[in-house]
Amino acid sequence: MRQLLAAGLAFAAFESVAQTAPPLKLSMELGIEGRAFLEDEAYPEQDGTGFSISLEPEIDYAIPRGKLRFVPFGRWDQRDRERSHADVRELSLRQRYGNFD
Image (cartoon, rainbow, N blue to C red; front, side, top):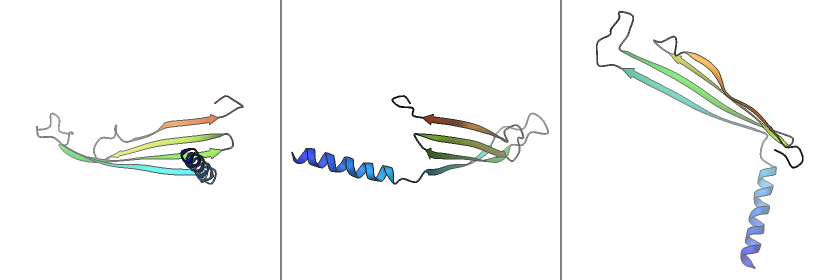
């Protein structure tokens, strides 16, 4: 009986926390990458060292009966212009309609 009561109280506490959660959740990943090559360059325009910075925020927004998720990505590279770019890694809308997700 005690276990059942404890489980019920834990579920009620979880439900109250879940209902008061903010509708917007933000998180971010920041990366710094260094590169160095031990061999000499094959071409004059190649450089043996360099670094890049990447940024990947995650944005989750609670909407009525669902969730919107947006994850962009961007990278800036000191030496390689082909590695410098921005794109959308994830864009999704999850909606609940009756018994269907």
